[in-house]
Amino acid sequence: MKKHMVLGMVSAAALSLAACSENAQQESAEAANAMASDVEEVADETGAAMGNVGDVVEAEADQAGEKIEGAADKAGAVIDNAADKAKTATGEAMKDTGEVIKKAGEEVKN
Image 1 (cartoon, helix red, strand yellow):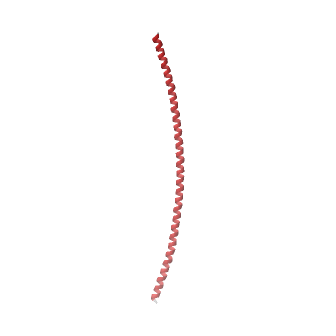
Image 2 (cartoon, rainbow, N blue to C red):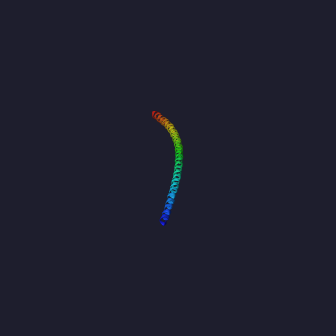
Image 3 (cartoon, rainbow, N blue to C red):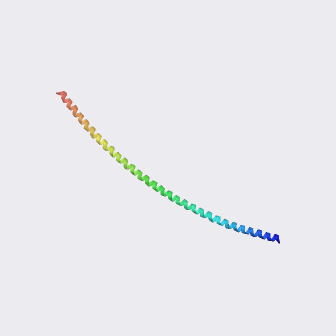
């Protein structure tokens, strides 16, 4: 009788452990699914944030390019203006030099 009683208790304990094991497995699977869902959500949010960062960087690069282009245009205009002034000054200097040479030539003749 004692053997049957011990065997029954061992069987009941084994069934209890098996039931707990299934329950524990179910809970573990649910926890793993929840974590996977959280990881996927974080990955989606990270991807969206990276997309936004890319958009901001592209917009800033476009603005920088426009500013550089504007500065280059202004520099070109300043250089053109300076070249025109140098051309005018050179022309006037050549005219003045020509007049000085002409006067010197006339004085030599006289």
